[in-house]
Length: 89
Image (cartoon, rainbow, N blue to C red; front, side, top):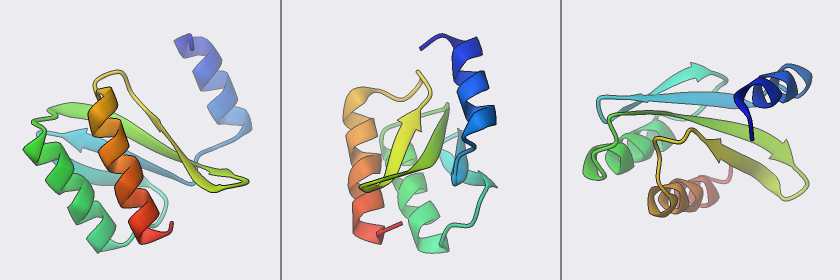
């Protein structure tokens, strides 16, 4: 999805939360999340050596849908989805 379109959609439908990954550490930029969830996200980022990236959580009919920046690969994305399911966000 082109960046300008993504920005437009986020203005219309803002995320429930935004997580920034910097230096293998997950940081809440927007929204309220439990410290345990953030710690689990930091563990994934650190073990996978993700130096930077973004995770956005959006409300959906099935719960929370995650979107990721391009710096987070497919297998790591699935790990974050699994953690989201465990914590029932």
